[in-house]
Image (tube, rainbow, N blue to C red; front, side, top):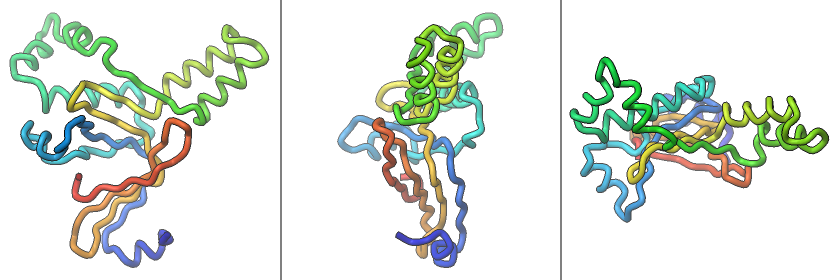
Length: 187
């Protein structure tokens, strides 16, 4: 594996981000790219958000992306209503946004440590439980396509010799391990 310094020398434009949220489309179809293009979506990977963004910001961002790409103007007008717009939006998205934290993450480990001696109802366990909900690793909204927002580590973005934009990162797996992933020009 190349060192970071050798990669910087090799590629002209490079940015090491570290931890971040990656926003992308998740599709359950044989021809993922063709399906997204049919919907007028030109790239699978949409954005990179700072890991410091509050979870509520990340959820609202997912809702906005979903609205922008997948809703009709009539549906958007329903959300823009002066009197009932926010309520309509809350009802539409209700409990449709699952979030997950893998079991080897620090918030999960702290929760387990707090539960063992004092039980689930202890103040320490409740505090750890709220942090677990506040700092998830994964957000999903919608279905086929869905907006996925994953917390990743070791994110690096650079241009290769052919001026393709490359993103590489480590994804957190459910078992707490890391998986190296990459995309080229948003795909």
